Length: 191
Image (tube, rainbow, N blue to C red; front, side):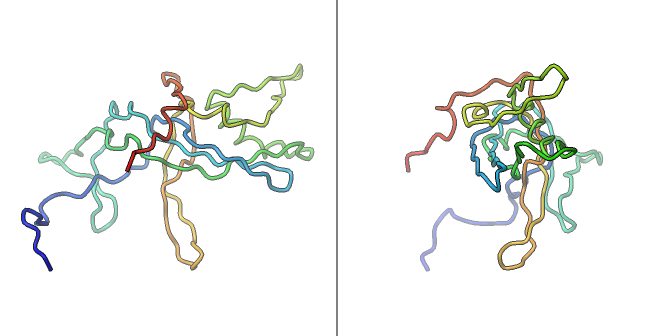
């Protein structure tokens, strides 16, 4: 083995800050639509916006019993900027659209309607006050601002092991957010 000078691990440095479940400003940065038995499933990806640096969150670390707050000398929970989350990407579970649902099953499109409206996609209403849904396209949502709620979700992989991942579980309108241009999405780093 070749010893690398000035390359040590003394254990005194803390690890990278963990992802903290919560609600953060983001933009929709990826869109995929698949058809399944006449229904559509939309898989969206969101990227945390630079404005996250304006948020203060409780500083956390992984302790013996999981995620634990960092305590100040007076015993209070230390606060830190959420800026380290800027640029991190999170996926949402599929959002389903069921065209022409059976009578009494219009609830199947409730999540689709809420998510589209939270992303600033307007739908028309008819004279009876019913919302007339449309099939969204990439140009309708890509770059749109929203607030995303991130939580841990468990799943079982192909080998039957229980795993967990951070997912976008809800989105909300971000009134102060601005749409970003397509050229700001997915900038490739030249490596």
